[in-house]
Length: 198
Image (cartoon, rainbow, N blue to C red; front, side, top):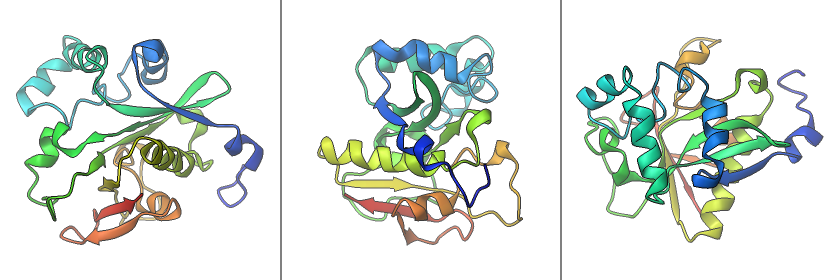
């Protein structure tokens, strides 16, 4: 499947749902033994540096994510192909992401209530097939159904033609652009702040 010729039937068959206790096992299946990457378990933006680094060794990050899910906190959206989990997008109120709130580059630009997408993860067997754009559209639909008005993200604009997958976890700007997001702040030239007004 080439990047310009995505399988439309495949993309239309994807479904998206928030991570809850009920599908926790699917989240573990998607993230695998590495917790997506380096035992992160999507806690990099949510914990301070010390707790995050310690959590990479003793399953602390995985346990911290599980605590949030068991407390019914919004943490993110999973994408499924048939019954297989293939995609993930962190999605929660901006204030839930400690590192964002302390970021000098991605400071709040106003006092509106926003929900942030600081990172995404696609199963390696399903990358470069248009899944990330569909995932973002799924997030927009979820936001619309749940009264969330502003979605914010901080994707990368690669400075080279091919960005290694390990650096694509914050999302690629072109995917957000295709999903209808617009740049609202260019403090960082290669990592603009983008928003979708639902």
